[in-house]
Image (cartoon, rainbow, N blue to C red; front, side):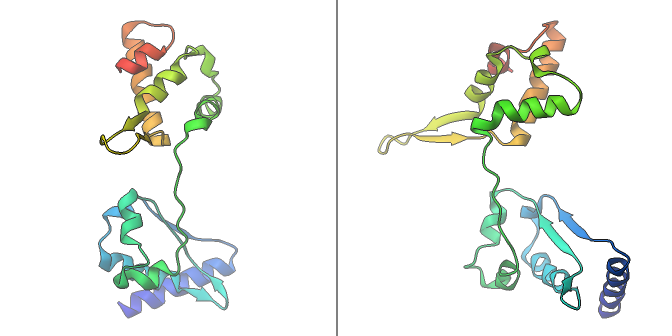
Length: 174
């Protein structure tokens, strides 16, 4: 294990000196066990002088935030080297987000969606939760993955039904 660690350190150092930067991206990081998270500390400590040789990005669901809690003594040394960034729901940026996504593929969203489609997306992904004792809590699931999945399903359904555009009603029913 120690020999592999030295070899990795040497390779990253040589590569960094050649002008390259390195980043390890781990998706579904909420599924990592505590032992694996603890081992990430070794990667974070790889340096050439004062320059870090490897960045680590962990992408995961809300369970990852729990695992990386300051209160967890098992992973405290990793947590102290991390910056936590939470993705907020798109909510007010939904229109701009979808216009951007369509523009990236050279398309205009107005060619595929009726104006009320955005309201349909909001109706499907934002809801109120109440327990009867407190005032209702608004919960938004308007994260990019959820929006993308809903939009894809609506586009497929519109094509199957022969509709020229996706409407708000079609999204509410999708």
